[in-house]
Amino acid sequence: MEQGIIFDIQRFCIHDGPGIRTTVFLKGCPLSCAWCHNPESKQQNVQLSYRENHCVLCGECESICPQRVHQLVNNEHQVDFSRCTGCGKCIESCPVSALSLIGKTVTTDDIMDIVLKDADYYRASGGGITLSGGEPLFQPHFALALLKQAKRGRLNTCIETSGFCREADLRSVSEFTDLFLFDFKLSDEKLHRQYVGGELSKILKNLSLLNKLKKPVILRCPVIPGINDTQPHFQAIADLSVLECVQAVEIMPYHTMGAAKSLNIGREYLLNVPPADPETVKLWKSELLKMRCQKLME
Ligand code: SF4
Ligand code: SF4
Image 1: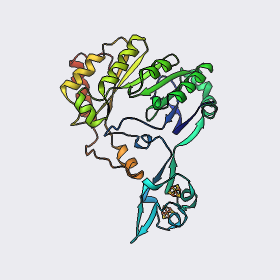
Image 2 (image 1 turned 180 degrees about the vertical axis):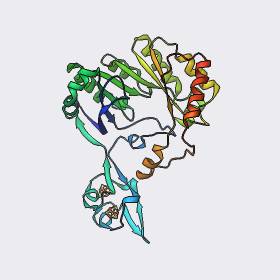
Image 3 (image 1 turned 90 degrees about the vertical axis):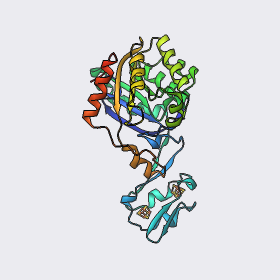
Image 4 (image 1 turned 30 degrees about the vertical axis):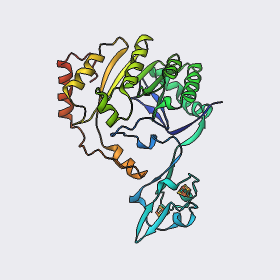
């Protein structure tokens, strides 16, 4: 039985594909989007999270940690995340739940036991299972095994992907995937490398593969003020919207949820951009419509 690492599983989701769904968040991502809203998904292995505003500086974690991750100096709790081996000792010792471990190893059966609890809701709503992340195809064997098992249970299946994956892996999972929620973040190769950290050409090639395979796609476009709210990028979205595989184009306005999460895991969050207000989002959509963007979601 395949095993993989997940960092969350959420039941009764209504925005990750049709109907009512269970979304499974696989840990690990090869990209480094500056605006990532799930920074805890980036690293594939289990990692420590520390919520500073919960800590009462009792010093229990400092005493118990064999790796000297925690140090209380002058009434300040210093955490060296890089030393943590994920043993979990400090988590149990903390009296106020300021510490936790993100990620756990599970089998496909563990996941399906949870997913199938809501089978009646999926049947009634046309829902099913969605694999998200991180990048689900960063654990291709686990993702494939989950999708196969879901299909054996006659569930509708979706994958939320950056498209930054091996073509062979995409091809294998496509056979067991009803809908791809496919990100399109930047249309300039240089900016893509700078803000996302991987080649755009690989992603576009994979999108074109899905088009060739006639697999339904919802194009998901995060829009970040000052970075990709530009005419050339909007035109690129409009151009892709005419692909036969694209069923809908969804604009995902930037929000700052990733900033606090980054702090909890000791990652730097470099973006300093305010979230997009509803009026701006309306403006973006009207720009896209002027460029003949098709299938734009409300
Ligand atoms: S999980 Fe273990 S190694 Fe990591 S900080 Fe806690 S006690 Fe130290
Ligand atoms: S055990 Fe919890 S409350 Fe005590 S110092 Fe560590 S993180 Fe803070």
